Image 1 (tube, one colour):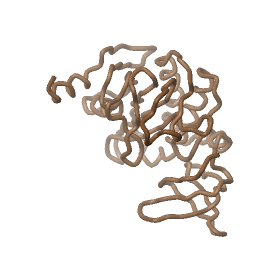
Image 2 (cartoon, one colour):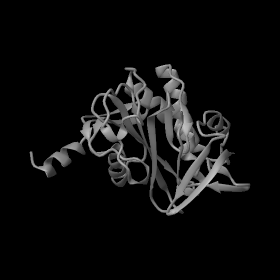
Image 3 (tube, one colour):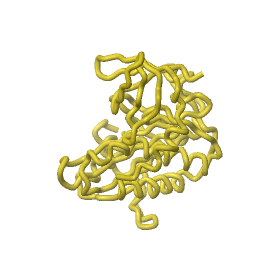
Image 4 (tube, one colour):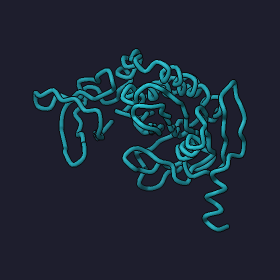
Length: 255
């Protein structure tokens, strides 16, 4: 089949129905559920859950890809609409991390930790990634998209992910799990001033008290993680200087 026809087919959900008032779009193999949510938002959809069996172009932060083999993980995106200014949602990613951690423990029976800012770890390996994006202007109605990828029972990974990515080793009702995450996160979207989850975010941190390297653009910083501010920014002690970052990427050995 020509590539353009294959791409067009991947944009069409195999199932579209209402589930407890939430529009659910299910795909077989698609390029990216975040892209499908963006396309739906552009067509006027204001609220929905987009789930795929697999992704051919799954996306992570900083332009990276997210390995999404068919039938072994849970890959979905949540679409919400808000009239609040986008700067109100600085803590949306840490909120999503806490919500996903809670639901994973409930459905999978596995306790997971959080690596700032958006990765969930189980047995020292990454099992979940979160990508938050927005559609719309800064001062009018905006649409928020929260993409989540969870390795449920993925057994093989590409060489570049070996030793880094892991799996929860479970088989569960994926749609039920995605719907629960959707509903829980929607409560935060309706009240973005809420920061009650930050205490749990800190308690679940796998980097708290660790020395890390933080890359922000072309700058590099070294410091010990003191904690996190109310918006999920990481607070470092960099040789006696207190620094706060709301963007960037940290690296460390989690062993």
